[in-house]
Length: 238
Ligand SMILES: Nc1ncnc2c1ncn2[C@@H]1O[C@H](COP(=O)(O)OP(=O)(O)O)[C@@H](O)[C@H]1O
Ligand SMILES: [Mg+2]
Picture 1 (cartoon, rainbow, N blue to C red):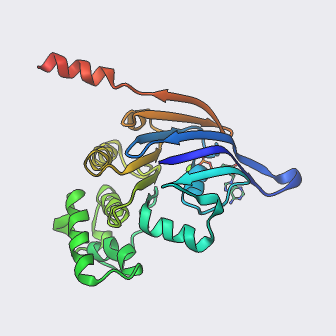
Picture 2 (cartoon, protein in one colour):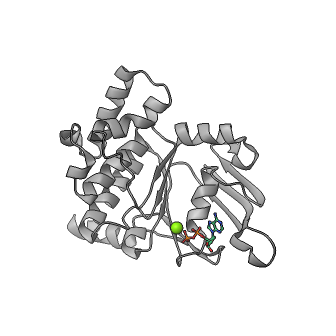
Picture 3 (tube, rainbow, N blue to C red):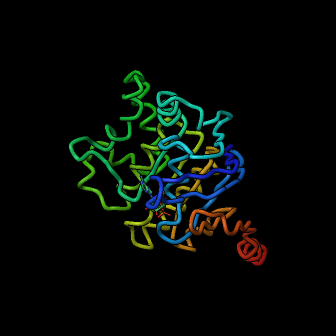
């Protein structure tokens, strides 16, 4: 579960200070698939950074996996990120001189996991994103969509409780974006990982069960999606 209790984040001080997140509260249950939408600069990435303990809140508390991130030491927050949180960004950030399998295994290697276990887990993660056949290739030989699937495998290899995806389709065309969203949905359903997705695209936000709309750091709207249309389509097909 991810809980924000009256969270405010102010960058800087005095005249030039920026209130990036303003008194935001929500409770996201384990296994949920939520989307964050809102104009550029509205505080979406800052919310993800706060969850991952990359930056402390100015006010309020943030509970992730039963622990208060705002009270963690930087070492504790780093351990939370290394073991419990998978992060996917718009830029894939794969290491060009490593193979796909080496890239995916990196978080485990850095955490001191034995190579035999790393190999098994990498295989499992690459299978989940349908990229096993590319394990020994280098990322530069892959399309953008394939690189992003590898980045998702790298995020999943730690078997995270939470996946934070910050505009993961931002560098992809619509078709590759759809493949990626289908994949995220599938992983969410199969593994029960909680997914928080930042997106500008309403089509991709519709994959979520709830959409939070953030404007100027404030939670403006909280919409539950019932997916009525799809259900109606299914009943017609039956
Ligand atoms: N490290 C930082 N230092 C100062 N200002 C920041 C920092 N990070 C973000 N901001 C500011 O906080 C606001 C929200 O940024 P961000 O969370 O990146 O928005 P979004 O992801 O919705 O585009 C913006 O005005 C941005 O300039
Ligand atoms: Mg952002």
